[in-house]
Image (cartoon, rainbow, N blue to C red):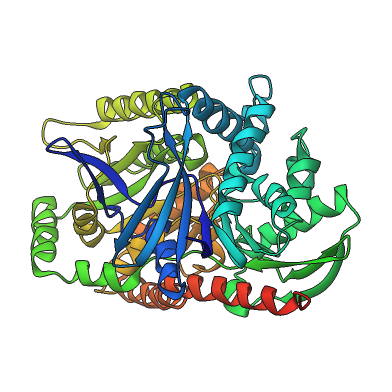
Length: 497
């Protein structure tokens, strides 16, 4: 069946598990993953389709189930699975996307690795996604492509289907031209994105950077530029912009540039945070802590997340402030992003070595300063720690958005707790009421965590109330509404056929 909405994303929109020898599709366990939000758009479509990849030993196997029909709380839709071999997944995702694109997107030029990239395979996989989307899309359909590993899909899709409306959303930072143009495939990538009707980013800075890249490579005209809303401009944050492009033109084609930050499901989080069982567990954690303070840090094991800088800051603070020893604990949840990649394995090993050294240096039989957790924590368990914590310490070196800081704030229905946030997280442009810090500066990091630990109750409450208002205003549902408007406006700009 042809679909009037086709979502193109590398992940399948469910968890595929075996139960009693039978394949079962379960809802994703994370309430704040982007998948539930994307699926919610199917409720407004006559019929929807989702294009993703699935590992296959033999893509030519006639028994491979390409299309799966799903009927769940979000509506009825088809999942079109592309059979990729392990070698294709490794080349397209682990090598090209993670070793070449990821470090450049996050401005870690020194970690960029061009040599192992197999560009023909990247093209091949992107073409397969584009073909699948073209097959599924009805006449004039909306096709929504997500994230950098599918950069070439819009260009290929436009060759196949001139009638569809294409929107592309980046879930990562987008760097300026001096950094992005390190990629030898820059023109091919950007030309593909310029085939879109909408190109979306979290914050105005990334939109401005995209325009700088496009103008460095092609004759692109800026048609409209708008001032940034005052509540998205905070002095002292590195990623603020005063204005951003909203409409550009290339080869007679108009492309909207959208700046809209992904948020969290505030209603869901508040419901869990006010559950009596969750609150009782949080109170027990507080009782067990005694008069000690709890700092919580949650993120993936990734060199962009700044885990080592954070541990080293904690070590300096303990060294310079003996009165804090035995009175503060850091719960560092660092979940491996991909255990198959050497870069992440090295990062994990460094974190474990550093945490062990700090615990050995300052720890006692009764008190260990750091609890380093390397496994995923169920969301309800995470909520109780958000509620029990005195401080959430979220200090990535670079981050497209960061939803953990928003989860923490949404959970704090008591209007207490302090958020320490890196100015290089996209969320910082919204969350200026946090204690903003520069993770590249030892002094800034140390001062920020001390400020948070010693903050008076009145100031904590004032800051948290302001943060909670922002997180509710820019929730995941608000982001979804922005994307819907962008599609509608793009369709209105199209000439009648």
